[in-house]
Length: 455
Image 1: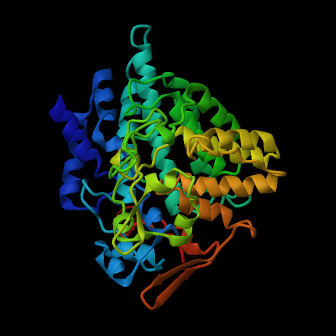
Image 2: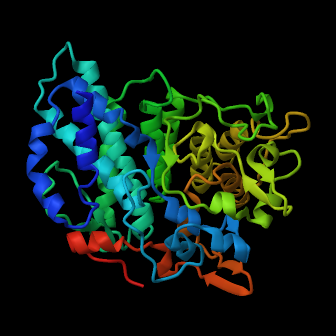
Image 3: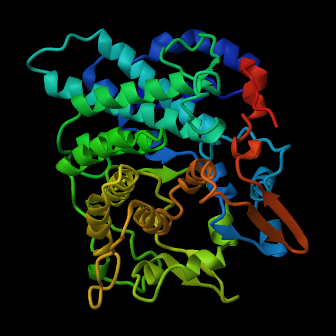
């Protein structure tokens, strides 16, 4: 059975991601020979290592959290990563192998497996005896499919705008396990509605708890739902989803209690605030070769525990990031992110006290206990300023900053022109520039003939 599962994963990982080769055309006809049929088979598929990875490496590389000398820039391995760093228009992903995938391959290989699971699940009778396993498997598949749809629309589409979302290009919404199905880009509106639909069903089907952080439960589904609603500017629903997530998991790691703050990766802990193991695949070398933006580093005060836990001083006196959960760039949701979503949603809904309560529940575990005083704000605008500053500091390297820049650039108060100096060259990215939407890999365009983003 393990060999069948391995073969199926390796085979499905090529769907929608590879160029149209003769070998691919010959292999497609044999897929039905290796499709699983039992709940145990489907469970094994969803427990594959494939599902612990996210893309978003390109948007992490592109954001304003890093700076580079000329030598550091030249050391970045992939040419397209260097293009992301300088926001070059004419950039293209390489068609990487299954171990080091690009964002498109990472997402659609998981989506295709989820579609196989959901299709085969629909052919199995749900009984009193198998109900809990049946529902859990369904919830997990819907969760992972929604997560990858969200990653894709964050990377390859415009930010959600209700007035234009029905005409803005989203992503291919692949819902069928038929690998011969023709795909096309749906609208941003259709994409987000599919994400919401999957996550709501997932949250309903998943169990309230799971044995460890490698498996998602209701708290994780509601957390991803809250993230989605925030990126749709739907603050009422984001608040509701965040409250639901916290109902099932409200634990926040107290950074005052970290055992060894001097370790190379002091936060490499199996924290209960992590909803599910989720790591960035094909992350650029920028977090290790580049340095953390100096002004960002200086935003961490001396009483902020993250300043010592997140950063390592290098020989040049600049800093790199070392505060990864699980010893890798972590992309999943946590109770910390949920509290920030709840706090921001409350502020935007003019509930200043609610905003500060949520923010302080997190901040009391991120600042030194001695001398810590709760954040206060006189009005919603002042509260929002505090929350967004804390959001950037808490969620550093999570693959979320680019999306935050896209949404905040629509507000003149928060919009900014990004500036990157590489040696004696200066590169800029104005607010709302088309380059905030990354290009679809050319090998995907060649294979599926879907519409490319325009610059």
